[in-house]
Image (cartoon, rainbow, N blue to C red; front, side, top):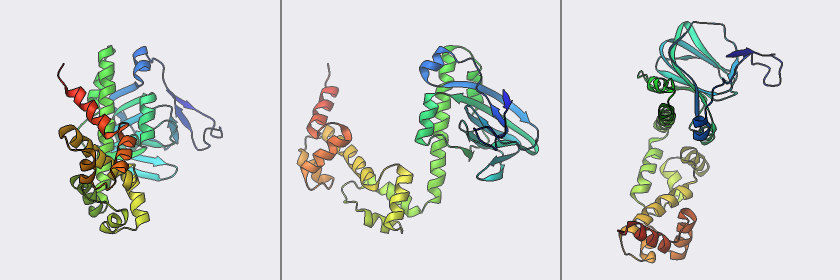
Length: 289
């Protein structure tokens, strides 16, 4: 339901309309932490005057037909191409709709702690993104319209899968725009865990200053270069501890840790266990009962 509000209200002086959260949340949605509170297919919106608005819920709108326009106070107006998806978080001021033609969509709205965590992690992001011609929201809409508990759970799971897939596709598209040398470096690190990966050398190999390299690395991975390299090395070292009887010092040396005590400290910081504790825990887990 739309609600017209005072344009001078505290919420935001530019907002003209709020789409409110509907009722009907059930116990299964509370327990699961995610509720699809609206879903429809084949929605058609005729061109209309642009009116800044916000939602009290998250929404995903796939424009699979027609012509569209997307507007935000920061970015202004831009066309939406057929096959693109509009993702909107609660209280994000925006507008989208028909542009000299109908806006034809499949649409899902949702709320809950799971969605909030996705937003905090960057999996949900406001904006317009490519999704393709396939109507990937339609199966979720069909499940959401089934009131059975099983269908509601399946709808939630499928929505989460779609949001993660869209996130990974966005990251993939952005990585293609990065320096190809940067992408190659991220492929080489797990292939050569025996190397001493020095930040200065990595930055030079990508043709970047060390400051730019560190910033881009964290944007891409969520970790500093050292944190990323250490986690790759420790993960593979754990596999070696599990599969072989090599001593801790030998394993440390194979992953370019000169000091086995430093290796053990980093191993415990990352895994929560010392190398020997990790090996013994894995042995007990695999031992037949």
